[in-house]
Image (cartoon, rainbow, N blue to C red; front, side, top):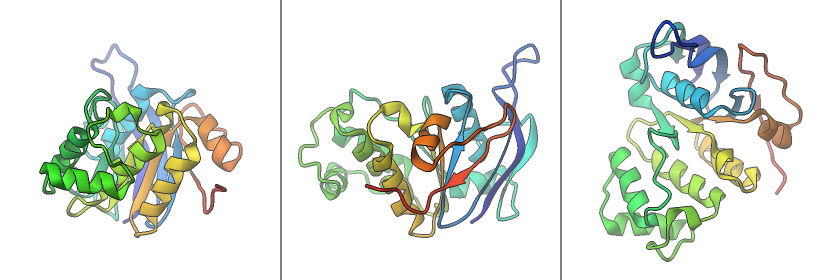
Length: 220
């Protein structure tokens, strides 16, 4: 499903506060990875606000979000899955890997017994589910989170927020995002402008509008 955000803003906690998100626009197509630079240095606050806006989980201050022509927040919440959003769906670093995956399976409304979680980890080459989540490679962590998110019934769009904040090689998580897009999902990644520049060449966002870039191939 095509996801379109047009001049979307998210207000601050009161009229005296600056907006959490300045006017932002993007178009994300099925089967593509759309990279969206958020904030001059990848502001976590703006990334969270934009993710919540795209997922129909926050009141907009202005603009609109449409999923294949539908702007009803209930439709967005049904089909847009928020992945690794700080303070919302991001897992706790200190938890065992099995506990993290079980929690993510619950969010995805999938069977979440320990055996199911261990099966997911094994599929991603993690044999010991007792290890701390933050000891896994950042690319592997993101791949696991995207995989589980894509299993949610009715998932059409994955919004991945700030995978570059974990460090590591961005080509690893981009490859995982590309793999999900290849299943005809729409994948949106919110990340720092310098990360996009490293992956796809220079990107110069304005102060008020996010620009997007799609990458067809990233060298290993």
